[in-house]
Every structure is written in C-alpha cells, then in structure tokens.
Length: 198
Image (cartoon, rainbow, N blue to C red):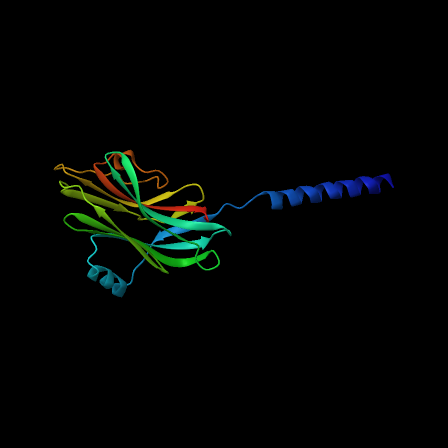
C-alpha cells in the first residue's frame, strides 16, 4: 500500500511538472521578413512607377490575437527624429503567408513622397526636404531576418548630405540603427515592429 501511495504521488508530481513546462513556456511571436523575389513583369511595373528608392519584402508567420505589425517611416535631421507615417496590419486571422509589402520614396526638388505598401492598400505622406542636399545613399534589406516582439527591425534607410562625400554604414545588426544614420544631416528610416493592437 505504501508503495502504491508513493508511486501515485510521484506520478502526480511528474504530471504537474509536465503541465507547468508546456503551459508555462509562452512561445515568442516572430515573423520572417525576406526580400521579395519579383518576376520580370513585376520588376518592369516597378521600374515604370518612377520611384527613386524602394524595397519590396515578404512577411511570413503568425501574430497572436491582439498583436499587429506596425510599419513606419521616421525622418532624422541632425540627430532629431520625427515620426512621419505608419500603418498597422494583422492580416487575415493574424496570419501572414508570404504577403508582399513595400516602402517607397519618390524625391522631387523640394519634397519627398513616402509610401508604405501592403496587400490591403497603401499609406502615403509628404516630407519637405532641406534646401542644400546633393548626395544620397540608400541601404536596404538583402537577407532574410526574423522580426521578434520587442525588437524593431530597421529594414532600410536613405541618408542625404549637403557635403561632397557621403559614406553610409551597412546595418549588420538590423535591430539597432547605426549612429551615423541617427546623427545624419538627413535620413529617412523604414522600420517594422510587432506591437499590441490599440
């Protein structure tokens, strides 16, 4: 009888530990972001759009209920950041299945037209450019990256200067924006982040 009680106690203890491990460990939300592989026809359409700088990428994975994918464009001028435009999406039933997204930038003489594109449509904004910018450098996503909750991804950025020379760091660590971009004379930054639904 004693053995039976000890055996039952041990079985209950093991079952409780197993339930704690499976129920207590919360899976972390993550999405896979990858440069889009455009067909020749799609690339021809993009070329005819007359956009100066763009990046097309796919999003794959699931969000939890109450979470959204926020895409945003920030502008930096001499170390000061300004939120320009943003868009949120949770896709169909919080599931992304290689959905095509984009950031686009059209530069005019005095203005820049900023666009965030996603399967359901687009958001557009306008930014007035500093007068004396003459050189630009654009860096965008080249490899697959995993977007995790709490870690924004800086997908692409454009840096502008009024100087004769311009060098831009390639962003190896996608979750941190290079200091040279943050402190640039002028920079447009494209960012992705998983957030709570408002």
